[in-house]
Each structure stands twice: as C-alpha cells, then as structure tokens.
Figure 1 (spheres, rainbow, N blue to C red):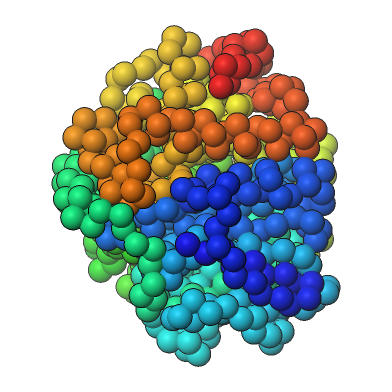
Figure 2 (cartoon, rainbow, N blue to C red; figure 1 turned 90 degrees about the horizontal axis):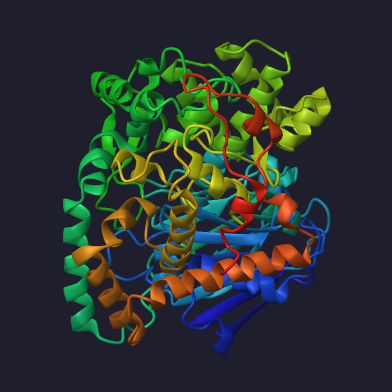
Length: 573
C-alpha cells in the first residue's frame, strides 16, 4: 500500500506508506476523508491549497468482477463543497495492480504549464512536459498517448474545458478499447486538474505488485459467489446487458418522472424515439454493439457502441443520464444528435449532465427553441471554442440562469439534478437535497425501489428512511471500487454474504453486516463536516423553489417534504 504525492509547484514526487488513519480505506472513503483532513475548507477550489485525489477502490486490482471504479476527489469549483466523482474504465485496475492506494496532486503549476503524470510498470511516477498538447481534445490526446506508451495503457485526462478551468469540466477515463469515453463528470474535477497543470494521468497496465490478499482461497470462493449473484440478478444480468442504462427511458417516462424541457414536464413528447429499445434496434441495424465491455473485469456489459448510418463509431456508451440531459431536457428527440453531443462532451471534456441542464436553462429562458438539434450542438461546441457564451455554459446551470435572469434552475448546491423529477419520484428529491455533494444520481437513487413496487414514488411514506439507507450503502460501496450496476445484486441474500466474505478475505478483517453501513456513515460524516466548515448550513439542503410550487404534468404534483422532514434525514447520523 502506497500513496504517491505530486507537488505541481516544485515538480516533486514523493512515495509514502499509507498512514494509519487512511488504512482500510479506498475510493470515495479515501478521497473524502483525505480532503476533510488535508484541505482547508475555505480555500479556493482552483488554488494551490486544494488537492486532487485519484483513489481506486480497495478491491480494485483483484480478480473480483466489476471492481474497476475510481474515485476522483477535491473541493468542488461547482458546489464549493466536498466532491467525489466516480469513473469506470481501466485506470482503477491498473493502479490496483501496482499497489497504489491513491495519487494526490498538490500545489499549483505556473499559468499555462502542462504536464503528464506517467506511472510505469514498476509503479515509478514521473512528470513529463505536455505543453505541445495544450488545447488538444481528449480523443486525439488519448490516441497520441497510446501511440507513445502502448495500447496497454490507462489514461485519465482533461480536454480544453479543464484547461479553461470551467466548473462543468470532467476527467475523461479510457475504456478497454483505449477511448476516453468514461467520465468522472460531476463537480468540476477536470477544472481542478487543469488548475494543477495536469493534462493526463498515464498508467501502465502491466503492473504485478498488487497488495497481498489476506486469504487467497477464501477470496476466490467468495469471488465466484459474487459473480454468480451478479449474473443472476434481473438488473445486472438481464436489463443491463440487453439495453444498458438506457433501458430506464421507457419506465421513467411511463411514471411521469422524466424531467423534460427544463423540468417543465414529466414526459418527453416522442420519448419512444430515444428509448433503450429504439437505440438497441438502431445499433443492431447499423452493425454496432448493443452489449459491450467498457470497464476492466466487467461481466454486466451494460456498455454499447453507437455507430452512425455508415457503421462508423460515434460514442460509447450512450447512457440514460446523457439521453435525458441532452435529449429530454433540451427537447431533442433524435438519437443521432444525442450521440453526437455525447461524443462532443467527452472530447471537450465536460459533464454531459451539467452541460445538458445548462443548455436547457438557456432554452427555457428563450435563447433558442427547445428541440432544435443544430442549436443545441452549436451551443455545446461554443464551450470547446472558448467563446464568451461558451464560458457561461461551462460555468454551469446557475451561471446560465444568472446570465439570463432566469430563476428556473434545477440544481442543488450548484449541481444539476439527475434524470428523475423530485415531484414524481419524491425520494430522489430527498437524496438531491441532502447529499453532501449536491444533487446526485448514484448517491441514493430510489428508482429500483419504485420499479420493484417497494415504494410509491408519489407517497411520502418511507422515502426519507430509504434515501438515508441507500446513501449510506452507496457511500460504502464506493469505497470498494465495485460498480453501481453490479451492487444491486449484493445488497441482500447470498450476494451480500459473498461480498462481505470477499472484503474480509481481501483485507484480513472480520467485518459483520453492520460494519458495512458503518463504513458509509463514516464517509458521509466526513463530507458533511467539511461542508459545514466551508460554510454550508441546512439551508443548502433545499430544492429550488419551483419544485415546491409548480405542479409537474402529468401527475400535477409538487415536492411534498417540509424543511424539518428533509433535515431529519441525517439528524441522527
């Protein structure tokens, strides 16, 4: 176990053993606890005192399936609070194979100076001048990097938006095919990376110095049981391989909870044209891939390869949240346009969710009409071209609302909502309000509870408790490197037992089922503590006013919870 610290001010690279307080941590647990411990809460997110941390899960680099998620953490330039953004691809496994627990980027390079951080097959880290790549977009950049360092290389990089330090800038992560189409999108981690002067993290995939597994035989047995549970679960073994996350377009529209036209309606007119079923049919017709492995050791295969009418690759993977943000919110009902926008966002290096919502706010303010494909494409392209309006969009939905003096901005703590309207999925609204990192689509998403009929999405009963429990559970899962899509198979029954056994066999611990939520509680406490020191109060745990006042068609309901009910979510954490 080791931490690599890189000071961008003096170009010093130091390798240290993992301190006792950080041991047995990984992923989001490590990034959040390190940020809370080491970063001044009131610092400038784009200044030298902030730190950017890359942390694989503590199961990453093992043989356990679907454990190639990496957490990227810092103080967020979008929210002003703590942030962990999660990405798939290959980097987490590559770092795990090298026994690297975290990479901490500190200090601040001189304005305009760019570097790569290269980690070779022996785990040796060095800074490489990257000035010639200034302004280069992520697809061209990654292709060049793989040409120099070889195809068995993992890349996490920024595009022009990160160099411009825009708060919607993402960190793009390469997939198993070497394409920068996975993203740590939320919270502006790409802007922090750009402020540090780091263009790319480059990791050799040939490492053979992974941390030892305490009980290898028990780990193998538990790993087989975990894989069995994932394959047999209806979501991870059924819907995800066939339709991917886009399979949610139909049921969420059917529930009247698909925020459309800047959340003025709960159903997108013509949603059938952009559903998972429609996308699968189109991809098959054109010879693309409806089922695709995007991340190391994935057996869910929820990825896809979207191709154009000539069978040429456009993007991977076209996800539900992106179809919503760049389609539903903007009124665009054309998969080719949405796929083109997804590729453009990845190439520029921006979060598709915050970008789509920023565009939707501008459309709602009358800048251009909803549903105009070319208008939306031209607006997103302005971000990459660094125009004046592009900078406004790149500063996020709140900045767009301020520019147009338009108050209908669907954000919490500055971060846009996800693809579930809180007036029709009220428990998701509880999560949006109370998540320490702003409105979030993975922190405590209740959509599975609604689809399984365990909760009524319009009824207040059970929503606060379920949101709290899911947020705690996901915070724990995010420490391990396990994919969210596989985790649904591991929350109860044989899957949960096998997952706990795998953790204990890897770590040499004797955790019991109650210790997993305790792990999540520790993470959320650290995040809330940082935010409190940064100046956040309970008033920041609120949805925008229009969610309380404007009924959402077709149910014509509003978000029903009082401030006191929202504040009870983590009152006894």
